Length: 326
Image 1 (tube, rainbow, N blue to C red):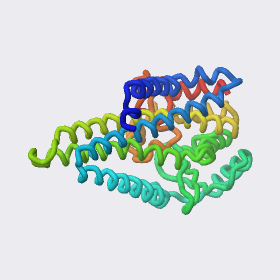
Image 2 (tube, rainbow, N blue to C red):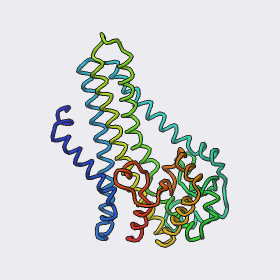
Image 3 (cartoon, rainbow, N blue to C red):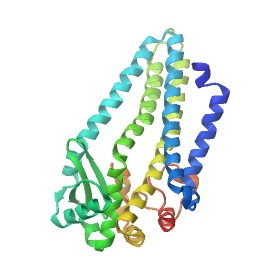
């Protein structure tokens, strides 16, 4: 199994697949120009990205565990299982506690007017009722929640005042799109992969440096740790590429809810605000939940491919072009 997972041919497939994923996420607009297979192509791109992230993570962990078992490094071997349980438990706990923490941190409060808008848009999209709350902060909106606490759409007070009714419906439609597509759960699961690889790599390196050189071969464990951390970075870029593709889908849902013009003008108003309010730009950049925001990337123009690798959202110019192609 080890030879298959990391044979030269398989490694070449990993590299080719990785390059294809990055090109798909960066050139999604080219795909969107072809109406006949636009949605099929985007769905396949997301599926391929997610599968590649899972396979690469599993292959890396399998390789590390196999080498450790061959060297009879059982302490390191079983610690990886412990780290896996730790990462899963902490992420699930954070997911379950996040609605309460967000409600307290952002002073979330029900809003009758916003609730009517959310109910109207949800009915238009054929989706169940979602709780609407107004929160503090610079102009933005986000979706959050879970099965126990319920599903929420949050809009900042400043954004609610800034937008027209149609623009607000478009923003709400975008956020409902995340709920409809189960983005919160999907991103939670995929986000565990680079985190697990990073903790495994860091743990192997730190534990090896503390060990006596007479016990085993610390250089092997250090090498495995560096491999895991490198794989973590690669998988993280795949997860971010997946996130950018999901944002296109959410924009399409917002446009379907209120029209392309309303979706674009809402994003344009938000962009103009951040272009002149630099303190708010920093607040968004430093937010721990900025990946949830409708406007997390505060640049003005389309970013080069290298810069775009580490963004959760596509640059706005690309989002505008995508909406125009719908």
